[in-house]
Amino acid sequence: MTDYRLVMSLLLQGRSYREIETIAGCSHRAIAKAKKVCDERGLVTEDQLEVLSAEDIDAVFVDGRRRTSAEFVAFDVAAMVKKRSGKTKLPLRVLWANYLDTDGAPGQRHYSYQRFCQIIGEYVEVNDLTMRIAHVPGHTMQVDWAGTKMAIFDPVTGKKTAVSVFVASLPYSGMVFACGRVDEKMPNWLDAHLQAFEYFGGVSQVIVPDNASTASNQIARGDRAREVNGEYRDFLEYHHTAAVPTRSAAPKDKGNVEAGVQVVTNWVIGRLADRRFASLDDLNDAIAVEVDAINGRTPFRGKPTSRRGLFAEHEQSELIALPEDRWQPVTWRKSKVNRDYHVEIATVKYSVPYTFVGQQVDVKIAGEKLTVMCDGEVIASHTVSGRRHSFVTDPEHVPAQHLQTSDLWTRAYFVRQAHKIGPNTVAAISDLLDRQRIEAQGYRSCQNILALGKGRQQAAPRAGLWAADRREHQAGDLLHRGQATPRGAAGEDHGPAHDHRKRCATAGGVVGAADGAA
Image (cartoon, rainbow, N blue to C red; front, side, top):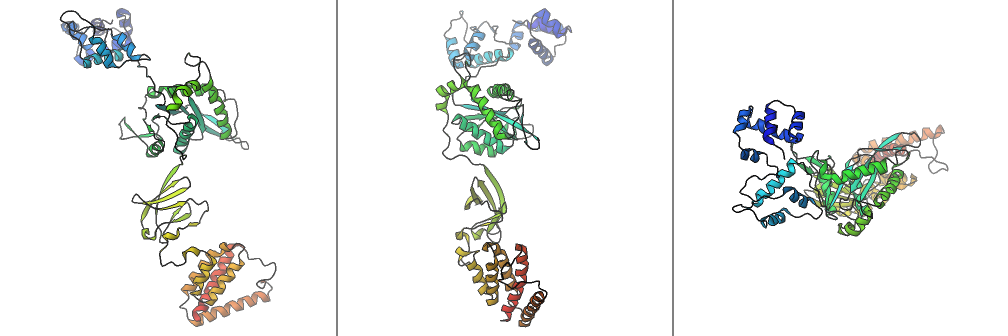
């Protein structure tokens, strides 16, 4: 038992901590606490210390091992803490009820429940005790990145790429999972969680991550409280679980995964350090073999069993079942509906109802499904297209005045539009499509012809005739020099697609003017 009066007296004499430890036989922590009390109470002379009674000092330095007052029934605080921290620990209220059953001297009273808990708490704080946590099967999964990185090497160039190792641990059984990822960003963070869930065959009720930015963010500058990231929260909600981030610089909040990280560092990263891997798949295959060896190793925790044995016997059945549909990564985009009632995402244009033209919309991409929302309401759904610069159009989104929507962007559509201009335009469109090896390659050129033709419908007949006559003279000159091949001749080469567009633009002007003249 520390004599705090002696410790404070030695402090006021200017003795060093080492001297006080030798004289009083106390710890460095006890001396620091006595020094704090002297500073707080303004004690600078021994005369001031002599004024303090024994009860005053006992009230200041309550450590649970001395009786604070003779009028209360004493109890063995150390024994109570031991009962509280054992594997079959008892609740504090039960311990207090047992204390009430003890007899004291005549006139003594029992401590209230609040004071009873305070004495035990002060004893734990003074002695720097760590309460042992009794984990519940299937309740918690702790996750973290290992501090030591691995690497893969390009087999051709020899370039080295660092690989972060994700570690997940189930505290009750001690089961561990590990896998490598090329970075620690959100997509890999979520995918590593998903692989851990599938490895364990289920999901725990709570996920305890580190306070990394992929898991949580500070709510306010200087605030220790943290808020789970929205994307991470949505991922966990899909699996019917939730995250409880650790406090900053508090490794004891996830002590089990810290131990698991150490095991993985020694028995996975350390054992594979001398091997050279050409791909991430090869590395993860090797990691999986070592992880299985860790989980199957016996004895474990002093018992003739393994992590996997404890997991299969007590914990596996307590995990939450995985959803029937595997989670797909979700990406959000913002877009504006164009005048053609389409939104463009990654060069692909997806239709929405034409009434939303000009409005801002949110686009959610989950796996192969693309959903367009406006003010929180779903207005369109499509399957994600892998063809760049393509159109995905739902006929129900097309305005009623756009007739024959079922054959948009076909030969029939362009011929029908050409008939509205004139017979020469119809001939030009048909001729252009006949020349294509793949008919769809000429659709954009057909659009150019239609646009030019419509613009020249009102042109003067003389302009149309002049353009047609000029084109005939040019063709005659080319034939005369032997630089042109009659249309339809064998071996005719039509050239690249952009040459077709250039010729079709010219043809569009000619036929449009001619149809206008007609």
